[in-house]
Length: 262
Image (cartoon, rainbow, N blue to C red; front, side):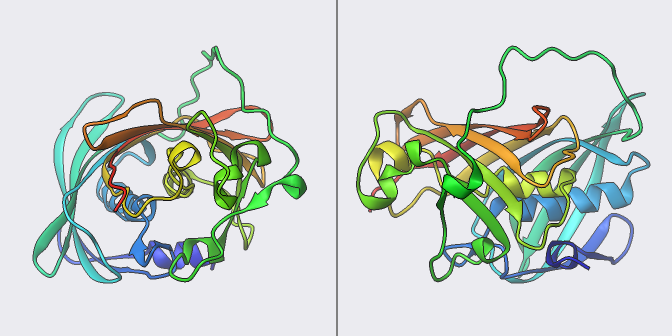
């Protein structure tokens, strides 16, 4: 079994209630990655619902989570012919840490309509990119290859850019294939794009994040682009696109984070 599959397993503990062990193998600065935590929430909804496809997950991060035991509670919110909606919360030590809305659908549905008004980002080959994340406490990068296009990686050596945009490649180091659960992790695996123009700052914690799954990727590597256009009021937004090597859109994301330099 791949490491990621081991670390998103749940144990049912009554109707809509699950026990989880939040792993320390997917951490950013010793804090469990938000996308990894969202995968745990998605798993609880999928275990409870008759629908078997993840369409949308929006999470509010109420307080900081930590590696260790967690309880996850899934409650139905409503259903239609195509979609099933759930509220799913993660608790640690009796306190609610994350509350999410999860929209599920039928994974076997295959709509034929498709129109892309944008294409996948243009990237140099992985071998010409800059490896990111080899730092103590950043265990996610022990398990994921995150490669930044050199054109937007100058900030890693102190050379800031003029546009808050990151482009790059990503894959599991153990070559696990990508499914909806893994796309949640990918959507939060890159550094904040505001680093490109502002440099690495002390604190950019996620307040709210939404990931919309579009297709299951069929390639080993994924091509990603993440952008921030507005920094004010102590907050930044981050818009993401995740594509496979064949030019198919796998997921889009929107994240809102606090911004603090010190």
